[in-house]
Amino acid sequence: MSGQPNLLIIMSDEHAPMYSSLHGHPLVQTPNMERLAALGTTFDNAYCNSPLCMPSRMSFMTGRFIHHQDTWDNACPLRVDALTWAHLLRFAGYEVVLSGKQHFCGPDRLHGFQEQLARDLHAELAHPVFDWSEGVIPAQQPWGALAEAGPGRSTEIEVDDLAQQRALDWLRDPARADRPWALNVSFIAPHFPFIVPQRFWDMYPPGRIDMPDIPPGHLASLHPVYQRLRAMFGFVDFEEELVRRARAGYYGLISYLDEKIGELLDALEASGQLENTVVIHLSDHGEMNGEHGMWRKSNFYEASVRVPLQIAWPGQLPAGQRLPQVVSLVDVVATMLELAGVEAPVSLDGDSLVGLLKGQNADWKDEAFAEYCGHGVTAPMAMLRRGRYKFNFSLGDPPELYDLQGDPGEFHNLAGRTAYAEAEADLQSDLLSHWDPQEIEARVRRSQRERILLESLTDSAWRGGASRPFAPPEWRS
Image (cartoon, rainbow, N blue to C red; front, side, top):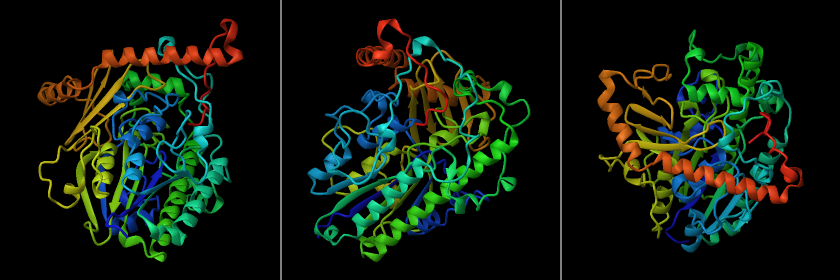
C-alpha cells in the first residue's frame, strides 16, 4: 500500500448546515454528523461557490469559479476537456469512482471518474435554458413541493438507496487494498421532493415542527432580487400546515441522509480502512426551508449558500475540532489534492485547508466567494463573505451588507449606512477587482442565445417560430 490516503467524499444535495443537531438545531437529529465531528474537523462557516446544483458541482469538480469555466446554470455542462480532481487523482495512481449524483449533463458523464456505480438521476433530466432577455416570468401557480410533502418512497429515495448499496459493496471488496482509491458517494437527499420513508417521517410530527423566523413586514421589504425570485418560483404565503409538513419532510430527509453517513463509516471500520481514509462530508448548496419567504436555493442568504463541511483522517488530522474561519468548496479541492500528494498543473481558485486543519495557518484569508447566474434573475449576482461581514452585489440593484455576528438572520441591510461605509467599500472593491459583472452578463447572455439556437434545431416543438416553453415551478432540479 502506498503512502497516499484513500478519499471518501460524501456529498449531499441542498443541505443547509443549520438544520442538524451538530450545528445546534433542537429538532433535527444527525448523530452520524456528530460521530464524524468527533473523528475530525467541522467547519462552521463553509460556503458553496454557486447556490445551484450543476454550477456548484462543476466548480467543486474543477476547483475553479464558474466564471472561469462558463458553467452558468443547470443547462450549461462542463466542457469535456476541463481538468477535474478526478483526472488528477487518476494520474497519481488512484482508482477514482462515483456512485450517485454529480449532475454531469452533456456528452461526458464521468469527467475523469473511471466508473459510475449507480445512477445520476438529475443528469437524466431535460434542463431548460432560461433567457434573461425575457425578464423574470412569474409562476402561474404556487410551488408544488409543499403540497406533496409526506411519508412515502420517491424515485429520488430509490436512486439514493441504490447509490448507497453500490458504494458499500465497492468499499467492502477486498480489491480495495490493491491501490489507493477515491470514492465520491453523492446523494440527492435532502433535496426536494419532501417525501421520506415512513420511519423518518415519524421522527418529526408536523405539529411539533418549528416555523420559519419571518418578522412582521419583512417580506414586503425584501430586496428586489428576492422579490423576483419569489415570483418566479411561485413562493406564495403558504398555509402553516403546508409549511410544517414540508419542513418535517426536509428534516426527515436529513436524518435519512445522516444514517447513510453512518453506514459508510461502519463499512470503513469493518474493512479496516478507516485509519487510511480521509473522509470529507459536504453539500452542493443549502435549502431556504421557508426562511425569508423562500424555498430551494439561488440566493446568498445563509440557508442557501452555506454548506456543511467535515474533514476527518483519524490519527493524522486533529479530532473533535470546530473551526470558525470562512472557507469554501474550492478550498476543499485544493485540500484533497494536497492530502493525496498531487500538484495541480493548472491554477486553482481555492487554497488548501491542511495548514488550517493542523493549526499552522494563522493568516488564513477568512473569505468565500460565490456567484449566481441562473434562473430567477436577469443579471449576474455575487457574494463576498469575509470575517463577520457578507457583501452581496446584483448588477442593476442596490447592494447588500450584513453583519452576520450581530444579525445572523440577515434581516438588516447595512449597505449605505455611514457607520459601515468603509467595510462596504472595501468588500465591493475587492469583489469587483476580480469579477466584472458587465463582462459576465455579456458572456451569460451570449451563452443563452447560442444554446437556445442549438436547441431550436433539435426540438421540433420549437420550429416554425414557436416560443420557447417556460419551465413550470415543479421542475425538480
